[in-house]
Amino acid sequence: MSATAAHGEDWKPETAEALPAVVPPPVQMGPLRAAVYMATSVLLFVTQGLGLNLLNANIYQLQGSLSATTAEIAWLSAAYMAPYASLSIGLFKIRSQFGLRRFAELSVVCFVLASVLNIFVSDLHPAIVVRFLSGMAAAPLSTLGFLYMLEAFPPARKLSVGISLALMNTTLAAPLARIISPELMDLGGWHALYVFELGLALIVLPLIYLLPLTSPPRVKVIQRLDILSYLLLAACFGCLAVFLTLGRIYWWFEAPWLGLLLALAIACLTVLCLIELPRKVPLVDLRWLVSRENLHMAAVLLLFRVVSSEQTTTAANFYMQLGLLNDQTQTLYAIILLASIAGGLLCTVLMMTRYVETAHVMALALIASGALLDSQSTSLTRPEQMYLSQAMVAAGAAMFLPPVMSKGFAAALSKGVPYILNFLVIFLFTQSIGSLCASAALGTFVTIREKFHSNVLVEHVLLTDPAVAARVSQLSSVYGKVVTDLSLLKAEGLVLLGQQITREANILAYNDAFLAVSMTAFAGLLLLLGHLVLQKFVFRQATPVAVSQT
Image (tube, rainbow, N blue to C red; front, side, top):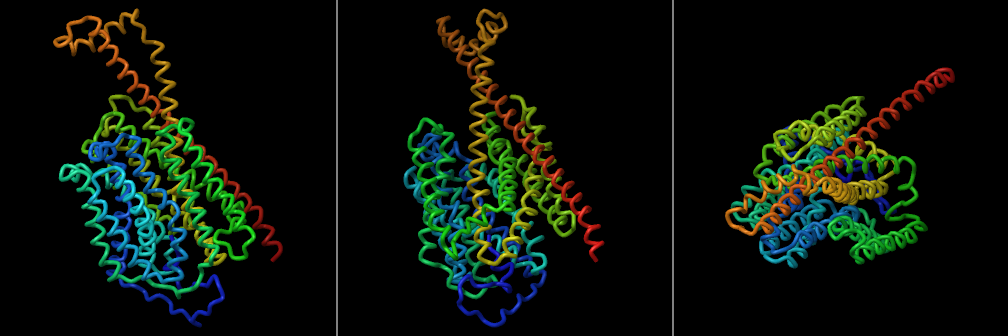
């Protein structure tokens, strides 16, 4: 995200090039024009978000379309995230030097071309290449979504209402993809998904040309070493994205190339540090990044990614484990979508008051309570039993991020425009790489706990137990009309019993993951309340001193 539209009137060059003496202030928009800009922002976020979420929502259906295994189809997500994780950092300087309007127009054209390529894919390997290009093309769209939302508000409201609504829009694509997927897959499978994405891109294309953004003066900010530094940063983020996406599937210690990817990421980061630390005008100010305030903000953002993964990955995988398809969860995701909008609007109201921290408290309390309710799931749980809990998690996730984003962005802006790029590094790392890390950690936790519960359950399955013998006989009776050999019939019954044990072990493992997320959110809530109490105490202690000095 950038502040080029948010504070174009305060723009300062990173280098010594002269600017016009006075930059005219932005013209106040009328309500109708502002609404059009806001609607364009929503459309940009939805168009960009559906690119990844349509794939995640139909992962098993796409296996058949592309004749791929689960591990092979996961490469599509890895290929998408590899460039997407870091490209916005490089684009910040590109649009500063070459102009915001040219950047916007070229970005949406590239996205349209990438969407067209998706339609012609019919095999896995071309699909991986196209997904890589789609990740590159989608990165600018999220930036443009932020800029169009900020453009609709006066400067005084950009860092409160504007950011809150923009971040709310980032939560819409995931549930929307699950809602519309069944009908699209029925119409034409893989190609129908991306024809729909192409249609959205073609709607966005003229809007970008018809609705210009406030552009700050173009400034030469790209230095030669910036190119090398960005390539190292992109390689680091890309390797981490692939490592975190595929590590759980190929298993962390089983595939040697996973270790090589991690080593390459560390090597690129080390070289980046050696290049950037001595520079007077670095691409990334590493000393500022590791300050106490930034480390605290990064920890809060990582906490958000962990607790919000309860819904985006863990709950979604839980539904698939129960055998629930997208058409059976449409109502649930419609409720999640409405809850996200409600939470985002409530947070927007709180951002306009002095009770901003209330949004954090409510968000953590809602997520912790919702995850705790989910941890009581059984094999008989259906979407109807999760309406309340998932609505609570969705509302909490929509309320958590805006206060942190606004505070961090304002702190970066107060130090100067170059520090916005450094803030972007923190934000993108915690939200893209942090999201992948949270999903990988929770997925690994579920796998380990499933093995544990399977061992515990199997220990109690003894054929000498009359109840177990009766259960095997009951299950094997399904094949009684086609299998006459008693030993084979008993073996089939044991296979079915083993499948039921595995299913129950998986459900118990997901319950453990829900409980872990709940406890993490509760711990975050306690730390937040303690921090607020300490702040209030320090403020009260400082007030009499200030009064006495006056």
